[in-house]
Image 1 (cartoon, rainbow, N blue to C red):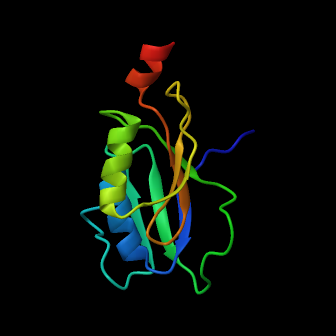
Image 2: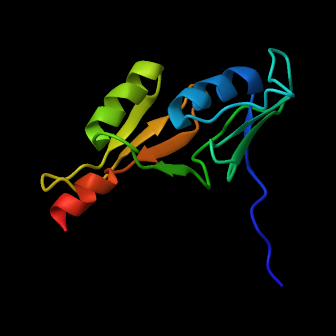
Amino acid sequence: MTSFISHTTVDCTDAYALSKWWEKVLGYAENPADPNLPGHEECPITSPDGSHTVLFIEVPDVKQGKNRIHFDLRPVEGSRDDELARLVELGAKPIDDLRNPDGTGWVMLADPEGNEFCILRSREELAATS
């Protein structure tokens, strides 16, 4: 017997605002039949193909310390550096730059509530160096 991941949950202080921010980052969307609204304590967004949902849930405590789990993002189009620029423009804050001179590595960022995530090289960048 095994299990599957139903959805990924992110604790936060403003579920609506954070869900709207991650919609832009991931290209996910809310359920039109049950839209997320300001003040909602639970705000899910789902991938275009319906295979993955991220659920933002308001909790009373603020984030403390480093995440024990985080997203590693790979750009669908463009390069890691192009995506890094886009995410910073959306409000992500760079935490650590682990890019190497040979093009390998990643950049660690934080979303508007301080949750860490990483941006990796695109599949095209990986193919070009393998």
